[in-house]
Image (cartoon, rainbow, N blue to C red; front, side, top):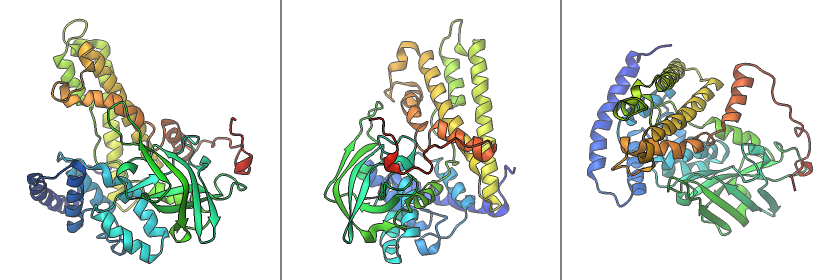
Amino acid sequence: MDFEDSVGEAAYRAQVRDWLATNVAEHQAMHHADQLGAGRAWQARKAEAGYAQITWPREWGGPGGTPIQSVIFAEEEARHPQRYPYFAIGLGMCVPTVAQYADAVTRERFVGPALRGEEIWSQLFSEPAGGSDVAAIRTRATRDGDDWVIDGQKVWTSGAHYSDYGIVLVRTDPAKPKHKGLTMFWVDLTSPGIEIRPIHQMSGGSDFNEVWFTGVRVPDTQRLGAVDDGWRVALFTLMNERLAIGGSSGAGPADMLKLAREVDGVDGALIRDAAFRQRLADWWVQAEGLRNTRMRTITALSKGQTPGPESAIGKIIAANQLQDIGNAAIEALDQYGIISDPALAPLAGAFQQAVMWAPGLRIAGGTDEILKNIIAERVLGLPGDVRADKDAAFRDLPTGR
């Protein structure tokens, strides 16, 4: 494991820092009507400089850079305050799938606008009855001449309410086993028959959505991959999810240490409490383990290698630690812990945000249980779960009705 940049990486990092120093200042000096508008402007600026999707090949509109260059840019960008989450799903998962499985004309049509932030994409996989079992989806598509007619419901669709397009996984043959009869399409989210309803979250935001498809007609030319081969396409989509190794977000052990020096415990400052000090030490050890695991990933990328499934460890630890630290901080603040106003709460309300966001983080991108299965089977080599439904027709599976 190497904690230092190579000569070439150090030079690239210096180049990125210089670019960010100039362009972040210029961007912040501009007045944008809203946060989304500011995000589009920043995305366009990055695209013009070749930083929007560094690893994309030139035929996709990218500079054909290396994964370690992408990591370096993410690390340096994270040092600056602006955060625009609108494009991550589209550029990290959806558009690469379109570029890989659609024809050249479709690829040419979509990659440029997505890179520049002109069009936003969302991924329509999860369903109310499917949970973390993506292959258990029930949204169906029926062939009608040169079109397909889609009916069903998706849920927890991040960003659908501000997205222009999406990729949707549907069932096209219920007579086949659940992983076999799936097909993927790209869809225009303004199409007749699509209804998007934001889900109100306890944090006050509405980042997720329910999406209904009622008789939505989609031309066969919008199909991605072969009919009934959507699971293979979906795996490609999921494999392209960007590695979240550009630094952790939210309140961490250092923030908790600072708070513990300022609030009272049972006998004086909380930091003097032996039981709390033990918890803080555990969090600190976890954070160091995450940092070293992240460095292993960066080292692998630097050597041109592909990080393995052990990367799943990071999200399990980070999401649970964020939830634990948030809960501990609010308990320490006693009655003042309910105050989440950034102008009044410690760390601008980051501990309260941790409590409200961490449960969703433990589900998004794979639940704790799914990730533990990945680690058990693909890292430790343990036997896989018994699957009684592996070869059964999807229509014959019990539904609980």
